[in-house]
Image 1 (spheres, rainbow, N blue to C red):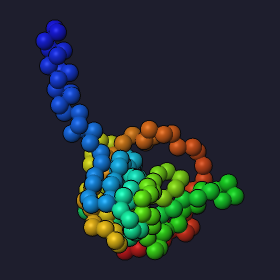
Image 2: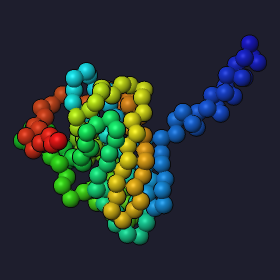
Image 3: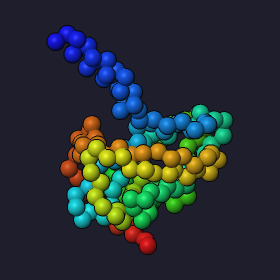
Length: 167
C-alpha cells in the first residue's frame, strides 16, 4: 500500500505543474489565471477573465482578442449604478500601465465572447489570441471553471443596454 501511495503522490507531483499551469509570459507581458464560466445551451455569450501584468517601461493596450469558439470577442467593463450592474464596451482598448497589473474579473473589466458556436463546458480550454498595441499578440487558453469560479456571484440585475451584438 505504501508503494502505491508513493507512486500516486510522485505522479501527482510530476503532473501538477502541467495540469495547474495557468500563466503565460511573452516579453514584458504576463497573463495569469485566464478562465471562463460554463454557459447553458443556447446562451450566445460567454466571458473571459485574467490578469495582465506589464513589467515593461512603456504602457501597452489590450486592443482586442479572437477565438474560433465565438464570432467576436470584445472588451467590456461592468459597473454598478443606482443599484443596477451595467455593462458597456471599452472602445479604445484597455490600458495596461508600465509596471502595473490590470485584472479582468467579475463586476469589472472582462472579455465578452459573442455569438458562441457552442456552449462552454466546465473543464475545457478555450484558445484565445490577445491583441496588444505596444506588445506582441499572445496565445492563451481560458480554462472553463465552475460557475462560482472560486467566488460566488451575488444576485443582481444586469443592464446590457450599452451592449450591441454585431456581425
